[in-house]
Image (tube, rainbow, N blue to C red; front, side):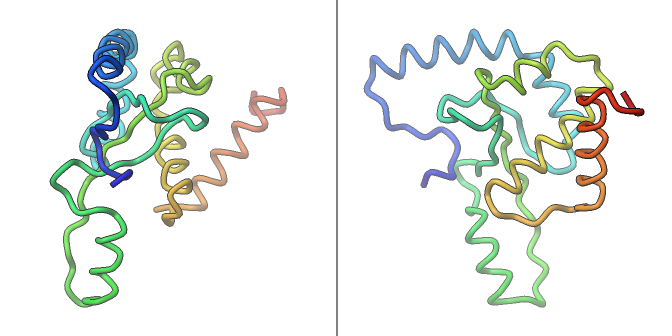
Length: 153
């Protein structure tokens, strides 16, 4: 499944190169990864460097032995009264994306603020509902004002 972590589709040589690159990137982004883990710990299982993402900053994937997000949705529809526990997922980040590159050099308070946006963006990309759409919208508006040099900048 493409939604599973540790997707293994490469040749041995490609794997070796990707592993070396991933280790270097993990070392470079270790502080940001830890900050993301801490600030999102109630919603995610782990944060890892992605080698599959090209144009998006982050995505959510399932651990190898966990049910897929789609399977969870199906089961909740079949048995709406059975409160199945939600499985925490893994946040994969794209170290080559400008948003992630920028986050690495931000102040800690900004990293925490952006971590929330990054998580919500990953939910939107996969078509999941946001836990607090109003807060998401307010934060996006604040960032737009800051970017434009507006009153909150």
